[in-house]
Amino acid sequence: MPQLDPNTFTPQLFWFVITFVLLYLAMWRIIIPSIGEILQNRQIRIDNDLQKAEQLKKEAEIVRETYEKLVSDGRQAAQDTIRSAAEKMRLEVAEKHEALTEKLIGQAEKAEDHINSVKKKALDEIQLIAVEITQVAATRLIGKTISEVEAKTAVSSVIEEGKNS
Image (tube, rainbow, N blue to C red):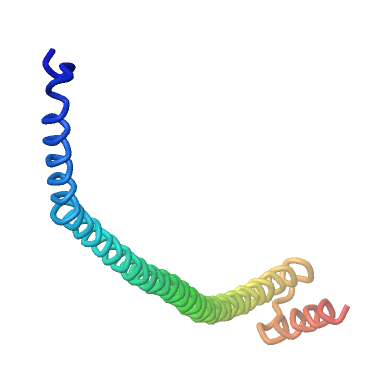
């Protein structure tokens, strides 16, 4: 192997030093500054991205707070609407209940008036029948015909006694 030959050590060392110095200078002047610039640009980009992320985070927080406020306001509005609708329905039910109660009272009064008129009519008819029965009974029992006025008077007095007792 020629690298291990002691006669070629000196030229190899010479070229090694020249190559090393040239590579060192290239690294020092060209490659390391460009790597530094790349790293610096990368750090600037990372810092900008972090700033943008922080700004977006703040904006997202504002949007979230706005959304929560809208949801809260919506819930409150819905509850208010439900409350007002329930109150309105309660008032309508109360009004309809009152109207129905008045209607039923009116119908009850009409029915009571009708019952009283039918009762009075029935009592009058019963009184007429009682007068006729009294006349017939008196004719058969005592053999004498009594007048309608006398029979009415007798029936009326019996009815009055029944009411008073």
